[in-house]
Each structure stands twice: as C-alpha cells, then as structure tokens.
Length: 275
Image (cartoon, rainbow, N blue to C red; front, side, top):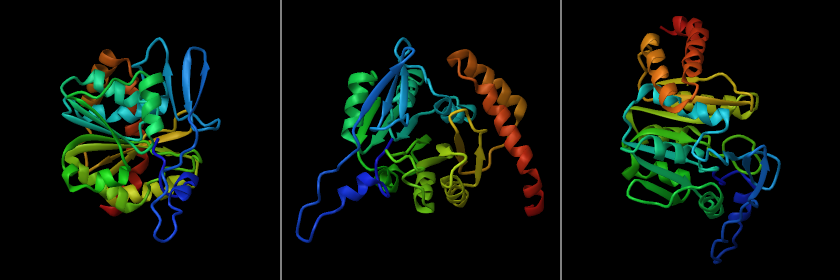
C-alpha cells in the first residue's frame, strides 16, 4: 500500500520551512501478525494491508486481492503488468510466477514495505523481468514514458489511516488510463460501504470508457475494473476463459464473470436511458 497525500504520514513529510531541505519521509511502523499459518502485514494498527499463507507463499490469500486479477478474463497473454502499492507483494509475486513471458513492475513509496516484502513475504529480487520501484505512484503514472505501455494496472493504494485510496482524483485515474494500452484493464481496490467509494467511482467514470464493479467481498472491499474502450461481453466466452483460469491457477474466476454479469444487468436501465 502506498503512503502518500492526505495522510498523517504525508503531512509529516511536507513540513519543511523556507530554505530548508524537505524532511525525509515518515511512515507508519510496519508490524506483522500471524494466525492459522497466515502472516499479515499491518501499518501499526489492526487493519490488514496484505497476507501470505506460509506454506503457499505465491498464492493470493485475500479474496479482494483475488478479485484484482479479474483482468485475466480479458487478456490471456499480457506482456507488461504493473502494481501500484506493493502491500505484501501477493499480486506482484503471483503475476511474476504465473506469466513468465511478462515484465512485472511494482511501485511503492515506502522503502520499509519493499524491505519487509523481500525479507518476510518472499518477494524475489529484481531481475530482467521484475522491477520494484521506490517512488510515488502519481509520479509513475504521469510520466509520459509510461503511457500506452501496460496491459494491466493494479491499484491498491492505502495508508495507515485506511480512509480510502490515497490517490483518488480524476487526474490520477486519467493518468492511469493513459498508462494502459487501448485494450488494457485497470483494477482498483475500493471500499464499498465508505464515503470514498462514490468519489473514486465518479473519478473512474470520468477517466474510463467503461467501469465495472465486482460484488463486495467479505472484507468489505469492492474491486472496480476500468476499460479504455467498452469490452464486448460474450458471457459464454468469458465463462470458458474463467474455466481456463480456474484450472491453471485455482482462482475463483467464474465468480468474477457472475459479478460482471450482475453489474451489467443492474446497469441496464441507466444505459437504456442514455442510449
């Protein structure tokens, strides 16, 4: 999870007087807990920022994080995948192992998160396919060198306060849309029953041609999928693809298709009025 903007850490980071050098970033402490064979990552409080099952370190343990992979329904052969907000590196590790043909990039501002992922969550060292960058996600997505390059962009940006994503403006999501290819997909971790949800959903609707939200998972998270162009939803083909994903990865991909179908069915009245 990236720690930046509108957070207690960001406020402490920017208080430098005239003529003074900017203070070194201050972050919430990294803490760990363990239960039933699962290690959890925290930012100094009870909120879970990531998890890893010790006996299955490359498995995606949390349901919402599994939902973040729903872009797989629309792309069988991604060439470059990006994660904004490293968390416990579950998504980064999964993408690195599952797609040996792809470049995988992860971005996190907090060097402590990167360090603990290397030491405690079995994140591999950088190589010719994996790159973990210590930087601000906003700087990454607004860099023109990153535009039009990525097949999937996964966004999971929370700080210790856990009051919704720390980057949530239309400008941020526009920059994210610019980073993915015309057929690319952006997946975003949102809070469903929280004031931050409508703000982020509205900003995503501004930036993308289509936004589809999967049903809330038991953690209360809602994953939103952003498309640069509206996808052609052939449900028979999507269910076939879901079977392929489930066979290869054991992820519950059929439930993703069910969620997409439920969202589109719910959205039909609005579409009929605007068409």
